Image (cartoon, rainbow, N blue to C red; front, side, top):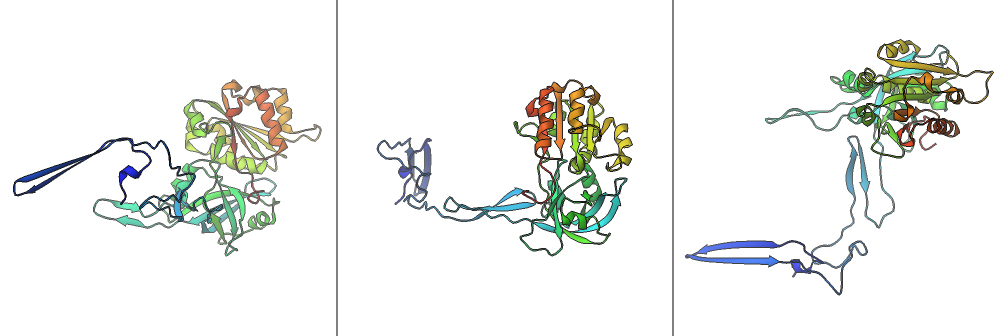
Length: 370
């Protein structure tokens, strides 16, 4: 028979009082269990999960865990070395396909993702969602999605595209609809064949879109430092966008209402490195950003100069950025990965930016895990 005394140790005092009333007879039983320590033998549950404890048998099972509002994964016990996770795909329809660069290479797709959720009705509540919506996990600019052809193979991971519309814009558009409306930026020249084909899709075409991925902008050295916490600390923002993969999350940042409100009290500067003025994206929106208090600095490649344009600009000085003291500034870096991004970060640290104040976006485009 199993008793509490068989446990390795009990650190509390347990009292049980039972009153039995029968024919004016009252019986009171008091049971006290005090701390018990095994001096000769202890049981290590981590060492042997299948220890022979009465009535406490270890059972291996697969338990679903909600990782985020739209992602479920499963975990197994220590006897299994693999975990299962299935990507959730939703059907999406292309609403618009418009040109956002003068040379026509960059296209913005306005996409409607099916997001129909039933609402529960009851006496104590009215209009409560039965389950989270697809867009509920989009809280920070810099998140992205994977897109693939309709009815693709289950093993097809698709291609990654950043959501260029801010969270506030997406939630406002989709608040009264059974769909989530997002914008993505597509380069008709690549980086893969799917991007080329996607840029040619006409309104009405359908694709499959994954759940929202990524955590936005964050520090690699301090997980407590992010875009929102930096604005709460009244830090000036320097946004460095490198190419198409950089301007996509940068646009979501600049259109975000908290950033626009932050620009009224602090400096917010966008440095956009691009091949030339005809290849630049969202030029028509630059005036609106400037009106909101954002300084926009395009950096074009000069054929007469060697090296990276932004590196050459940093070597001349940082006063052109108009963000005050770089030691008190937060820098958002988005776009190219590898040596180019590393060289820019080294130069920024050399100019006085603390390494923990460099916030990176984990979106680089292309296929996942590339």
